Length: 196
Image (cartoon, rainbow, N blue to C red; front, top):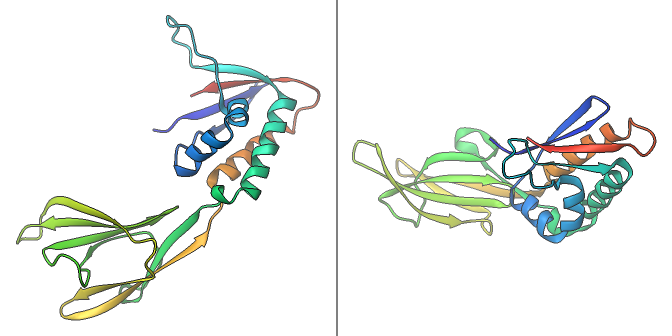
């Protein structure tokens, strides 16, 4: 279960996730003042069962959202790569997860899992017993610098091709959704932010 932020104005509400992935962490570190306006809450009283919350003027919140959207547009560190693989042997295009690989040049006693996604592409070594039952995981190998790995099946070698594309963080979509919600209200109303 991930954290969510609920925004309430005049009995209407909008909820967006608080994404604590690599890009979310970087945004929190590089732009703490803007992040605090959009996601920050006051600490509740120790004896309270209330969720952390805070009130902020809608104009201040909209301005912080616009500034963060601008940072996502212009800050190269906030534009992650998305890694995927293509594997013709299994007719996979744009895959992100596959187990059971036997990698040429790696440990012959292990099978490997490839795991791809935002700013990650790695092989995870796994060991199985003679009946093919999982025993334990071994080394994780970062392969973002690779374009091809070779999988050996029944004496044949097959290419698994890795590619990367620029990807927009899902945080951008979340911020745009919140901005669209807030723009429905006129005047300088106050927004209540509640961590859910």
